[in-house]
Image 1 (cartoon, rainbow, N blue to C red):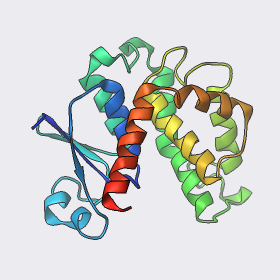
Image 2: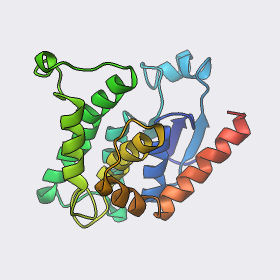
Image 3: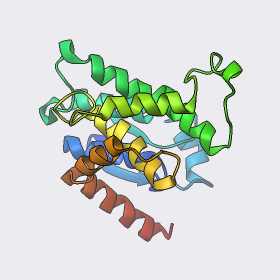
Length: 206
């Protein structure tokens, strides 16, 4: 067994963590969890009390939440070069946690049919859906990657939101998003991760 175990379901945000695992080139064991039973078991709740995937356990350390997993793996496997130098991480942290906070919240509420009124905009962390999308567009426009001219773990996380948003129809079409997506889907690690998750879905009959 490897020193890293990956708990996932191919119909989940686990696909983000899978992509990141492939980017760092780590050896890992995959544990597939179904939503009805395994994910709610006492054994798995001991790993993640939220009873959700993904999660990783690396050398006895547990990490949950996709943004945290991406950041952790970038630091745990520095030879992959997926985190900027420590004195050059402003954009890296900014957009990684922008996606985990305002973007995630705005996308979820949009999917649920919730529209924030102008009066409510100061109450919610993201202000308004349009404000979030405009900020996201500015983040990827005129640059190759989210933190500059080099691909990082932040691109795995932010890029996954943009790819899913386009796939499921909540992300408006913008030229900057299309150009950014085109660069991401050509990455060998992205392709490998998608192939492994698709195979897992077929195996599980998902």
